[in-house]
Length: 184
Image (cartoon, rainbow, N blue to C red; front, side, top):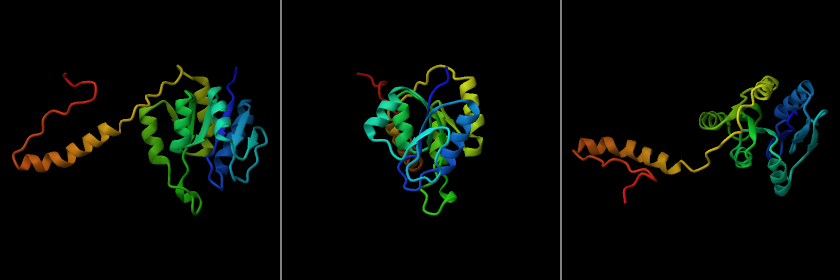
């Protein structure tokens, strides 16, 4: 059975027409059905059902059905889809595509794809091929480690920033204790 697509553009007033059009064309080519949330976009899908915006409860209900999510690479919707355990294909907004567009999302997508089973698609024109690969080899159900790594990142930053000046003064840092590895 083919999964249902859930295409999400976020709430940007200008939508993300490149993503919606590519997803609509991919759905037609691959025989998929689903829903596209298009915000203020101008492109109206022909294959996929569409709505301008999904209320938060409706979004959660749709994500709970664990569709194949095709989304812009914003932290909010990627995080929502991860918490729901969905397979995710993310397409970053590029700030240069349109004046006033949100910040370029390629850095976030590249980083999240290194740490989690999120499938990046850096060019909307390549979305049909990316979806074909995901559908051909879905692999095991995605498992997202959602604990925060902010403490580790901060500790690593502080150590890198402070260790060299301290070393020049003849000081040494004790070994870094990680959560869960402390001795009682």
